[in-house]
Image (tube, rainbow, N blue to C red; front, side, top):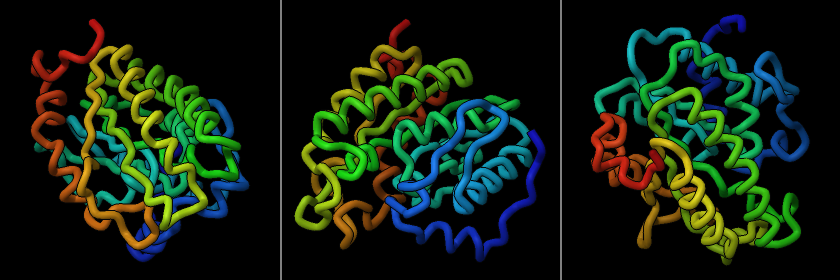
Length: 241
C-alpha cells in the first residue's frame, strides 16, 4: 500500500469537529479488501492520516480504533507506548471492519483498543433496537476475528450510554444489549479484555452522545488495560485460551 503524506494540523482539527453521524457515513461505504475502498473525502483523509502515522513508527505501539469515542481521545501515548488513533467519526462496527481490512499493519501493534457500537444504533440504519444489536454483533465478529490474527492483545470497551432526550435519532435502549453482545464476543476471542470506561456518572456533552471529557474516561481503564497490554496472566482471565 502506498504511503501517504500527513494531513496539515488545521485539517486534522477540522475533521475532529465533524459530527459522529456525518453525512459521508450515511451515504458512502468502505469497499472490502485490503487494497482499496470506496471513499468520501473525509474517509480518504482519515485513512491517509492513519497510514502516515503507522508508517512513521519504530518499535511497539498501541492502535486505538473505533468511532468518534476514539477519535476525540487526544492521548499521544498509552501504557508507555505511542498511541496511533484510528478513530473514524460516524463509524459502525461494519465500517470498522472495512477500515481494518484496508490498513497495512506490517508492523503489528502490541495491542488494539476498540470502542464501537454507538452508530449501529442510528435509527436510519436500524428499524428497531433489536436489529441494531444484531447488526452490531455481526460487524463486531468480523472486527475481532481480524484483530485476533493481527495482534496479541485486544481491549474492547463498552460504548457509553445515549441520552434519549438529547438525541432522538438513536436507539438509546440498544446500548445495553450491544454492550452485552460485546462482552460475550470478547469472552470468545483470544486475549481480549472487556472494559467499561464510560460507566454511570460519565458526563455527556450537549448532543447526548459524546462525552465531555474523554481523557478522564479512558484514564479510568488505564490500570487494567495496561495490565492486559503487558500480557499479565490475571488481566487475561476473561479471554479464551
